[in-house]
Length: 289
Image 1: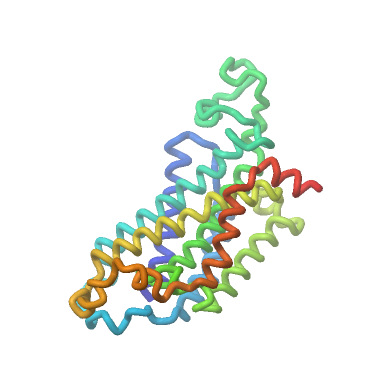
Image 2 (image 1 turned 30 degrees about the horizontal axis):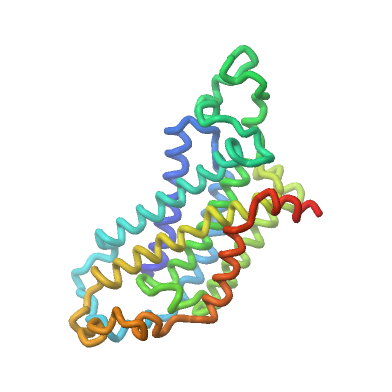
């Protein structure tokens, strides 16, 4: 139940932060209502339901019984919701801004032009040689929506356990969650590549280079949550007195590597290294060949 709530709250906080940042910075709309409805009712619903099949934490027998007066959401958990939600929102807005300002196939405008796009006109010297219809392009909105969907799938993986690392509880511990994530991503591909759905959602198909950037922007949410889990396990989690002996050995090499899923590392590490070492220009040439 707690992981179900955690996933939905942090994801919804991210959407609120996205809308707030877009308005505060004066950027064009990153997401429209029909896209938010699709994310909330369809793509988020499947992983949220699958979280009900999560296995118990590995250290559940080392924890004391939960105090009946303990709130369901503590101050620390609320902070985690906000931290993850803020990254989700910032990454979503950043993906749209990336296409406008940095992408090789984008207009490569300045942040000033982006934040003052309503002033764009042929007579405005700040927008010389810039066609104002570029602010109506479906690409930034597609980047934002794709990052939002992908990052929330990563957030679902974070919700596999409250405080256990993915290195010790890999995603296949809940096969239903993996299936739900695959189905949610398939539905996202459906609205991207099957006509007339892109017209309805005001989006457009992405290139390989753009998809790689989507994944690059989305994956750090896992690193952020792993850091928060580390703090919770080592400094905030109750029941430390039940495992004093193991705590004394916690900094030994054998204790640090105990229980790590090496198969998960073997699968993910080469992919992550390849992803972040890949240049977008190379990706584009591969995608067009």
